[in-house]
Length: 385
Image (tube, rainbow, N blue to C red; front, top):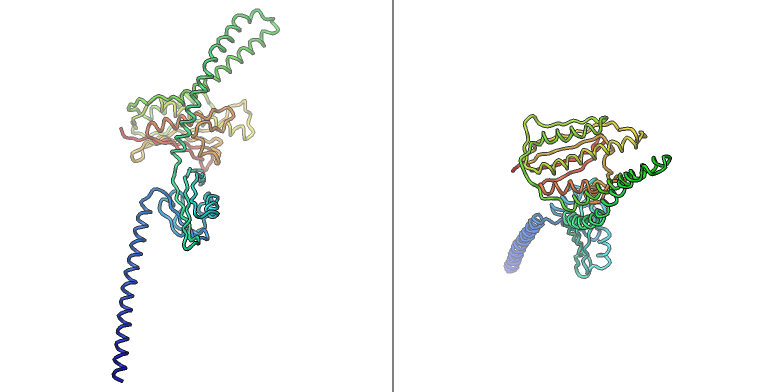
């Protein structure tokens, strides 16, 4: 009996030691897993690219902070959700990876969230275990500035070529029409003089319109480098609005600037061009709303345009608001691109020129639709030297 008890005691001690050893090994393994998890989370948090992992049921199991920022989602809107809810734009590329798991797939997609749109470069790879697909890892980068720069460079080249080809014949056409009018008007039968004058005036007027369009091409393709000086922005805005008021007497203009003067370092000529362009666009938006509501196109539209400036931290913010037709929600993210316009006779260069000038001033331009109706354009300038 003593021998049996001794054997039982030794067996129990061995089992206890084994359990203790296994517990130590298990705790060590857990610590290693936890350390690796923290390391992985730290790495993912530190990369600018968005990272999303999904299981073979296409449910999100892992993501990083950049992913929530780029996708404009909160943590509760991404973890445990299906890919179709989180990022439907990636589904077509995912289908290609599912068809050939051994071959990662890359592609560009447009991410549309409300009125904002981002161009993303996507890369999707499958994770396999023992021949079975276990999960997928989706990484994506914001390439919106790169795409915009490429488009800008391409359109600037087109603008230079078009301006060169069109500008040359305009002057002789205009001069010839003016000479025809001067020399032959009195020689034409009296019954036809009115028509003759109307035809030559039409040629001269339309050549002038084409000339203005060409000037926009030239401005866009070859904007001069800004010449900076300290300017009183309130005084600048007041003078611009004063000129525009006389052109649209039925539109009420208001200028709201702080009592204290705001001086910022800008190219006064270029900023004057920017504000004038935006105020004219606002007046055209009011006219468009007037016509859309059944108003007479021959009558001047009534409305309100406000121009305001303020300081916010290290920035000077200028806002131009109107109660016009607003921006088309499906195109608002593209209106700053060259040759994108909502007007039948627009060249689509006005806002592209504004954007270029703002970039040269290390600032930015933002477009919004106002909840109460109409549009809002926000210019953000650095307030420092």
